[in-house]
Every structure is written in structure tokens, then in C-alpha cells.
Amino acid sequence: ESLRAYAVPKLKEKQAFSNQLQPQASFKVAVLGAAGGIGQPLGLLIKMSPLVSELHLYDIANVKGVAADLSHCNTPSQVIDFTGPSELANCLKGVDVVVIPAGVPRKPGMTRDDLFNINAGIVKSLMEVVADNCPDAFIHIISNPVNSSVPIAAEVLKQKGVYDPKKLFGVTTLDVVRANTFVAQKKQLQLIDVDVPVIGGHAGITILPLLSKTMPSVTFTDEEIENLTVRIQNAGTEVVEAKAGAGSATLSMAYAAARFVESSLRALDGDGDVYECSFVQSELTDLPFFASRVKLGKKGIEAFVSADLDGLTEYEAKALEALKPELKASIEKGVAFVHRMA
Ligand code: NAD
Ligand code: LMR
Image 1 (cartoon, rainbow, N blue to C red):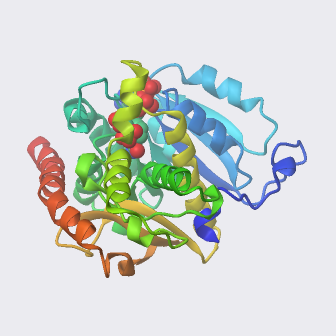
Image 2 (image 1 turned 135 degrees about the vertical axis):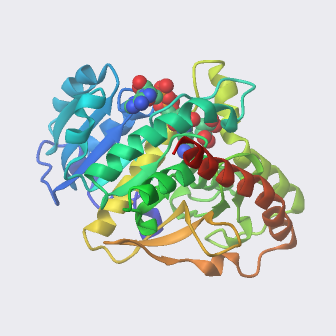
Image 3 (image 1 turned 60 degrees about the vertical axis):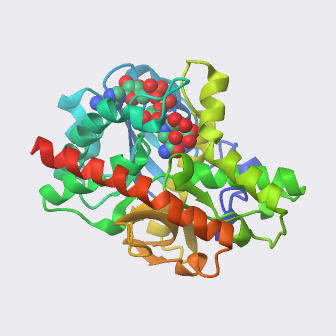
């Protein structure tokens, strides 16, 4: 049931949109990069959560208007804006969850790694302030390339002596959202029932949907497996090309990130049945970071769903081996960046 919690909100739809909405918990969430393409709709979705009491919006510009706009929604949370580095520490003090979609998006013809030169520095500088002000928060990294930006975040936290690997997450929820959508369409299943674990990383062939582990159990032809896998791996590029220079996925990403925030808040609130895929420090493979399903609890990751890696099909086992060199190189690039700057 927990795996479809976002698709089946615990609140009835009517209640969620009414002015009767009552707070159910009082968590504080910060979004860094809140005036951007992802940040704005993500702010809206988080503003709708009954689990949130304060929504802190940070950006280097244009965040005042976003906050003023969102603050008129008659949902319980208070929206507070923070602009520029001098206000970042105050934005972060006391927050339970920090979401980071700050950074530049791809244009057609670019890989996610082409964003490294700009985004690595952005993530590093934001993480230094996160480490100093809310080291106990759950940290959700959206900024690309996720395969490098999460190791960058980890190294900064380590340098500051506050790294808790159970609370640092690379957001790969969009890969799961896409896999669920495409499989449901292909197999004419009820969307609400479909759950596909996606492991590995978040770029090209490092994105590995485990179609053999689809719930409910489905059979695919070899051709369907190949086509679905490639479509899920290239779905980000599909959006980048359709937007033709105007950026990458923002709305589906905001939806996916809001699901991950809501899952984190439910875990923090004591729900004992919360599972999500995420790119995290991991011992499931020989790579130091790896995306898999994890069980979330009050203290972050409570368990890894290692069973997902048992009994892989030949196709999946080969794809897993094939993704490892690229993922390893991206992780090492992130680590080396922080050490170079030290
Ligand atoms: P965008 O350009 O629309 O917005 C980015 C925002 O970040 C802007 O408002 C900008 O002012 C802000 N920003 C830049 N530097 C900053 C800093 N130092 N501190 C705070 N804010 C800063 O881009 P977007 O479409 O929102 O995408 C943001 C990032 O998310 C990109 O790197 C993109 O590749 C990534 N992304 C990841 C996923 C995923 O699945 N993990 C999905 C989609 C996009
Ligand atoms: C995505 O998967 O949509 C994001 O990582 C953005 C991108 O550059 O594809």
C-alpha cells in the first residue's frame, strides 16, 4: 500500500482542496532553487501537504514573488522567502527536509554530465551551508548530474564532520514514476497498481528498471523489455528534445519530488511502511552509491530492499554489469571535485 501512497492520498480529494484542510503534522521543508522550473510547482505541491507547517523557499533571485503567490493558498503551512547567500543560513535552521533543485538544466544535445561544470559548484556551496545549519535534516538532491552531485554532497558533509549516509538521498523518483506510467500504458494496467523498482543511477544506461520485479506480476516479450527499458532510460531526453531549448522535465519532476518529500515526511511522522527508490550510499553492489528501494524511517534509511537484486533476468544482470563503469566514473568525478577544491 505504501508504494502507491502518493497516487492514493490518505486524504480524500475533496478534503485536500477544501479550506477545511487541517494540519496533521508540523514539519519544516526548505526548497533551494525554489524560483526555478522545478522549484515553483514543487513549492505548490509541498504547500498542499497537511504534514508541513513551514515552507522555506530559497533562490538567488525572484523568490519573493513565488512565495507571495503561494502564500495565498488556504492550506496550513506558512511560506517564507529567502533571497541570496546572506539569507541561506536562516532558511535552513530547524528544517526537517531540504530539497535541492538548484542548478542549470540540459538543452538538446547535452548529457547530464555536461552540467557538471556549473552544477557541481552550486551543490557544493549550498551543501556547505546545509552542513552548518541543518545537518540532521533529510537532504534530497535533484540537481544533475545526480550520479556525481550526491557524492559531492556526501564529501562536503564528511569534510564538515556531519555526514549521515542514512539521510542523504539522490532523487530518482521520476524514473520510477516514468516506469510505472509506461508499463501501465503498455500493458493496459490500472496505473494505481503498478510499481516498477528502478536501480543503478540517474543518467542513460545507469538507469535500470527491473521490469521482472514489476508489481503486479506481468510478463513481457524480449522486444517489450528492450523498448520499455530504453524509453525509461531516455525519458529525460525525450522531454529535453520536446522542450527544444526551454529546459528539461519540471512538472513531472515536481510531482516525483513531492512524492519523495511526502514519503520522507510520513516516515518522519512514524509511518512504518514507507518504501522509495533512491540513489544513496549503499553496500548492495561494489559501488559506493547505488539506487535501489529503501525503507524510510524516522532516522532516514532503515533498510535496503536487497531482494530486488536477487534473481535478476539475464537481460537485467547484463545491464547491471554494463552500467557499473559509467556510474563508478561519475561517482569518482564528484568525489574528486570536492577534494580538488579543498
Ligand atoms: P531552472 O533553471 O528552471 O531552475 C533552477 C533554479 O536554480 C533557478 O531558479 C536558479 O536561480 C536557481 N539557482 C541557480 N544557482 C543557485 C544557487 N547557487 N542557489 C540557489 N538557487 C540557485 O532549472 P530546473 O528545470 O528547475 O532544473 C534544476 C535542476 O534539476 C537541473 O540541474 C536539472 O538537470 C535537474 N533535474 C533533475 C531531475 C531528476 O530526476 N533528479 C529531473 C529534472 C531536472
Ligand atoms: C530527467 O530525467 O528528466 C532529468 O534528469 C532532467 C534531464 O536532464 O533529463
